[in-house]
Amino acid sequence: MRKSLIMMAYVLCFSLVAGVMVLKVPSIAFGIGVTVDIHPETLNLESNGKWITAYIELPEGYEVSDIDISTVFLENVIPAESDPKYGFVKDSEIRDRDNNGIRELMVKFDRQAVIDYILANLYHMAPPPAKNYVELTITCELFDGTSFEGSDTIRVIYKG
Image 1 (cartoon, rainbow, N blue to C red):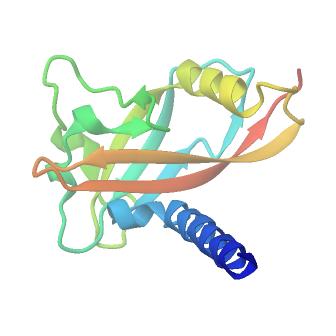
Image 2 (image 1 turned 180 degrees about the horizontal axis):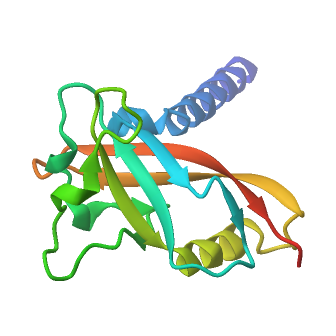
């Protein structure tokens, strides 16, 4: 009886560890890893403004013009703004901004929606510190259904 209880305990522990390991699989395993650069690099949570800008760079073999703009989200909640007249990526939004030979897609997110998200989801229990760093993740799909995800860390300022 005691051996079977010990064996059951081992099985349960192993199952728990295996379950945790599955949950800790990096998100890159579920899509293509991309480079994301979010601006401003310092966001004042009390500031006014219209946009948060992000530059998305895909790895070799993929082209940013193949990104379905309707699937671009910040933190899986805030959609990228697109030109309602076109509803797709315009040539002016794709360029090699950092001169590394790889073109980036420039997308914009509503600044107030990003600020509201940060305050509601990251600091819902207490006021944010005066200066802090926040990692923001952008997800998206290509027209062929291939998904990707990338993150960037920005500095957040809040004087309260």
